[in-house]
Length: 215
Image (cartoon, rainbow, N blue to C red; front, side, top):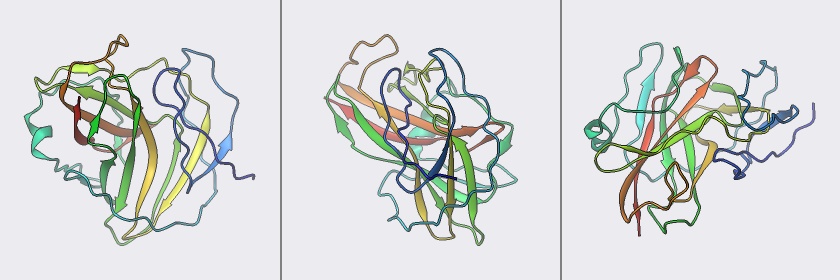
């Protein structure tokens, strides 16, 4: 199979950054408004590339099969209001998830963050997911979702394959936010929380959070 570098997209009508360490199987793009079906599993393995651990807020931790997440204090203080989808089965393995990227941004100016997975177990983690399976939302200090997880985005149908060796931390996907709310209006200056998670078919990860300041 051909290995291609593919552009990912998470925000409406805005292209995402490609995952340089992963291979993808190309499938025709969906029309606007269509949702991505679960991609068929493929026996394709990509050699792992060691990446430096992310310097971010305290990551969530999950050890399958029991979901036992530990997030930073800000996440605990937020009301349990979310627009993120849910899976039914926790991703296998013992790992951390996190967000790395800018901590300040200008309203209306797009920025990107990497959703990462660090393998803290003794065995490898093998992931096969869609190009738009990392979903995110943005909350204000009152816990209100000001930028919901969008369902009707344009997304190229791709199967992304990622292997993470024990002790490695790898980027799963990038997300982009332009400091605008759900209607496309720039948000007011202040502190916001980006909350992201991987939902690949029935499987899901805990949410990773990162506080950012909009100026």
